[in-house]
Length: 383
Image (tube, rainbow, N blue to C red; front, side):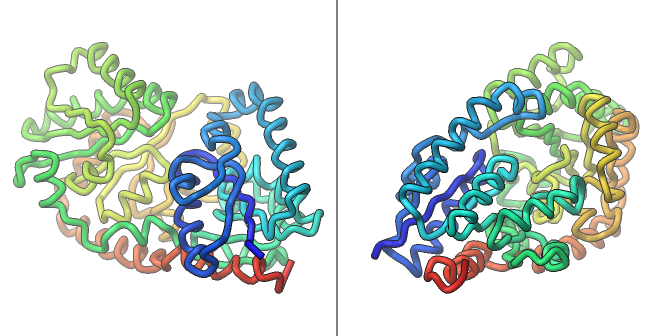
C-alpha cells in the first residue's frame, strides 16, 4: 500500500525544511504521498498543499489573536481530513502553537505524531514540555543540548542537527562573495541585517543608520551592506535613510543576498534570530541586537531562562559575541562593539575556530537523520 503522510509547515523556513525531509523520505519510500499545509518548495516535491503555509505566518501576540478564528477553522478542517484519511503519520514542522494541538489529536486517534524542530523550551515557557509529552510520539531536535531535556520528561527524541550546517560550506569563499557583489577585495565592509519582518526593520532602521554614521566618523573608508527581504522592508529602510539625511552615505541596500553580504563582510550587525546562526556558520564576527515594545521586552525577559538571546552564544554556552538589546542598543555602543571586531584580527581568528567547531557539531545530514527517525513509525513498528 502507498504510504500517506500528513504534514504542516509554517512560513518559508518550515517549507524549506519540510521539502528536504520529503525528498529524504522518498529515498526510502519512493511512492510516499504527502498532504496538508505547505509552501512552494514542498509542492515542488509533489506535496498536496490543501492550504498555503503563508496562512500560518503570524507576527506577535496581537496578530495571532486577530486571526485566531481563521486559523482555528483551518486546523479543525485539516484534523477532520486526517481522521478521515488515516495517514501513516502526522509530521508538524515548526509552528508549535499551531501544530502541537494537531499532533495531540492525531496521537489520540492512533496516528503517530512527530514534531520537527523543538520549541525553545530551554529559553522560555519551559512548562510547554508537559503538553509536548502528551502530544508527540517523537521530537526531532536541531541542537545537541535539547535531547536531554526531553529524555528527562520521558519524550522519545532524536538529535538530527541543523540543516543550515549541511548547506553552508565549512570555509566560506569571501573573495567569491565580494566578486559577486562587485566589492573591492581590500575594502572594509560591515553587513547590517535589521531582520526580515517589517516591524523589525521599523524598530532598527534608524539605529542602524545612526550606527553607520558614527562608524564613518572614525573610519571614513568603511562600506555598509543592508540586505532586505522584501520591497516593503526596503521601502521602510529607504524612508529611514531620507529621514536621517543619509542618502549619500556608503550604505548599499540589497534585495536578498543576506548570506553573500555576511560572507563578504568584515563584521556583521544582526538582529537576533536565525540570521545570527547563519553569521556564526559563515564564521563572521558579529554584534547581536534587537528592539521590541517595552512591555513585550519586559514580559519576555521575565520569562527567559538564559543569560543570552543569540543562538551563537547559547550554543557555545558563553558570551562569545556582544548582545546589545533594547535600551543598550544605542548607536554609540553598537559602533564601539563593531569597531572592536574590525580592529582585533586575533580575536576574530579565535572566534572563527570556535564557530568552525560549532559548525561540525551541527552538521549531521539533517534531512536523512530525520527521515531515519521517522521511518519506523511509517512502517508501523511503533506509535
